[in-house]
Length: 427
Image (cartoon, rainbow, N blue to C red):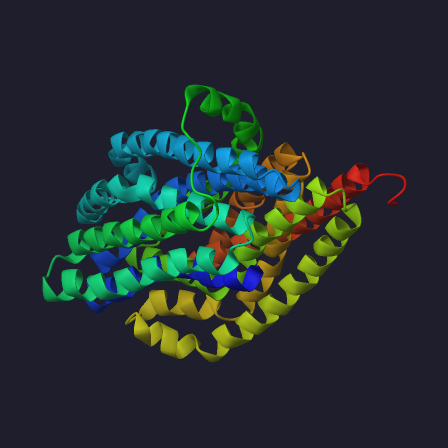
């Protein structure tokens, strides 16, 4: 589940990485910085969609585990419709507040203008992305791991074709990047909805009663999950604001590191989404012994992936910097990320695993608290201190070290949740 989900999830983030590569080839620091600022904003809407997908996936997986095909179909249908409605509303809110948000991130002058222009185009297709994310989560809940993977793989393929045509050949720069992204998202939505319709029973007849009955259980999970997911872009926005004080080269370096992180550690990002349906199905089947086993193996898996990916990043740090035509401070920040700093992502991985456990065992609000604490108390004080000691590099160092304490805390609290849900007979 993690391997196939990681390929699919990696394709989502490769979409952003490809955009960054082609924009970097233009050798315009203003455009590169604009994509960096835009990434911090787009992260909010993407996180909102991921939060919705967690709730839909958990509810569908529980119905599948209980062998109730009709309920699973109804939940999948209502989940998609509600996700589109609320995702569109959230995207419109971001669209209206774009100038204020970009200014709050620290962008000024031509960089701010380019960022707002790019985001106005790109945000329009965010609801389509949410459809693709939720549809892929539904496929995973039904055990269709390969088809869920192909949703984002095809999105990346479409983008890889459109990006050079629109950005370089047509000379549309950021406009081309936004249009290519929209095309990619249309492909993702189509590849998610088609197999749901043709392979796993299709959609249930839509009705107001079905939607209303889905609202409470969906937001019982997705509400805290959305708040949990939004903590990450908030933390990233705080870091972006601090790095902005060191110039466009620093913002560009941070943006490239931010694009490399989910690609390098895609299996860790995917582990949370893959682990959720496994826990949900075993919870529905009353197998808490397998829930405990999955939790321990997920932590071991996280450590193995981090060691392997960090070693590859270190070996490839120079070619990666050359790929983005990075120089000066931008290059220094890429080298810092690809060095020992990436090893500390293990503790972020612990938080992902703990969140998957809590979201599916009725303790979603605990995940919310941990994530917000990590991305506020575990980010801002450490990043501020690092900035004072080591400048722009110190911001990234502080951000990484702040995750250590909260990763350990999240693991301990998740284990307590498992013990509470374990029956005396299973214990």
